[in-house]
Length: 170
Image (cartoon, rainbow, N blue to C red; front, side, top):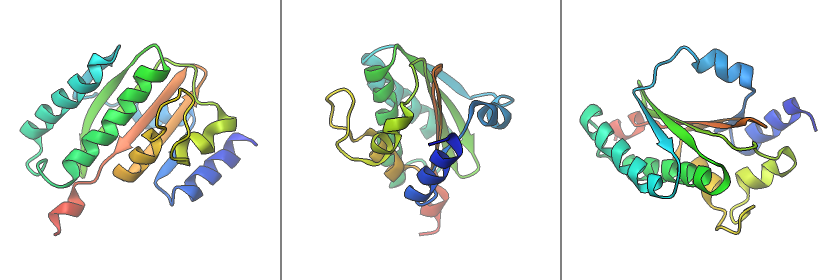
């Protein structure tokens, strides 16, 4: 299966929430942006630390951060960071704030996602390549409005978009 076919299958199976993009598209969209915060991911201790640092940072900058989405967004981010710790030598989280909420880029230094296992990795709850619970991607898909996945042999970049505006209308 070619890259374009993977893009279509992933987009349809995620009901439009998950997109597979190439490195050139990632660079065109995001290389000119300056993150508000860059947090390194090097080991297990970083998982909880990143969650707390991000939470404190967003509490100071987003007036409606204390809403029902907060814990779900932080849990989804925690899953992404945990995947970096479990499956790669390390990486980083870049934090941005868009008009509708925080956006995270979780970038790792691994060998990339295996395309022949991609549908299982992204959609099958309980599927794991490391003996874990295999809930990471299904949780992220559930808790973020949109996820972009850019993966190659040079590593994987996830763009996790949240939408806090839906909670302001209630």
